[in-house]
Length: 194
Length: 95
Image 1 (cartoon, rainbow over the protein chains, first blue to last red):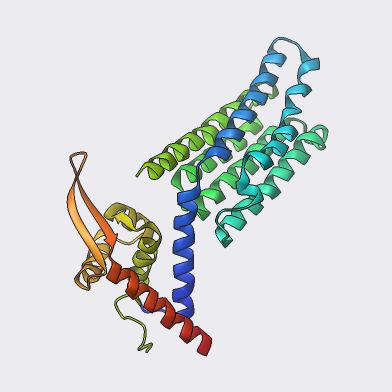
Image 2: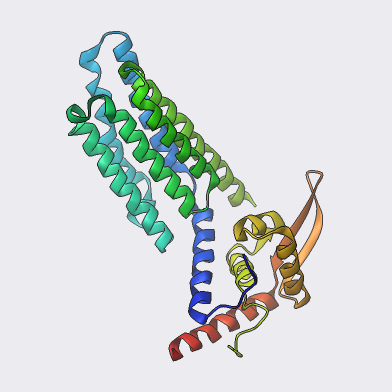
């Protein structure tokens, strides 16, 4: 970054950008990543276990937890109802997760038959893109790396046998969603104690 | 060019550092370097200029046996930043 002169408008834009990015980092508790990481891992893990035991009729039931969790998250996380930080970065991140979340739900519940073996890889790629963009927008390396890993895992998913895809989904949920949530939460707690 | 704008604040790197400190109050050299994506030498020079003007307090010490430089915005720095923003607003209203 050069020490160069700016126009007043550029200066004001720069101030807004830096302050909102700092606010975004300060208020990111990671709780939402912990929540979704755990739920998706539990659902996918249950799918894998039922499949392993030949209890195929039980497989759809854990997935019913996802829409319930989505409704619950609205009440559990005031972040989505009343955004603490009203800024463009926050709106873009929230909007992007709303769009990708909606698409994941539609793919999982309405297009599962059409997508077949490709459902999990597509969902993982979408998850990777969302995590990566969240990381880039909020200048958060943990989320960016998690996004890249989820994206690669999604692409690798096209070569993984169908039976192991729920396991891949569970692994990515734990490693790329829940673990970043734990790291973000730990940093958030440290900031609150300082 | 913009004579009412404090020349010490009115540069991209120093303004980024000041804006960050207005929100964070206290930061450190590493965080400022990561956030600005500038090299150590450049960050150090700009911090020196802001410190010389009394806008920042730079404290060099040790944290967990590693060298640590903490940077804090002073009251004078906050006042200068507020004056700068007021001047910016006046310019933007004129445009």
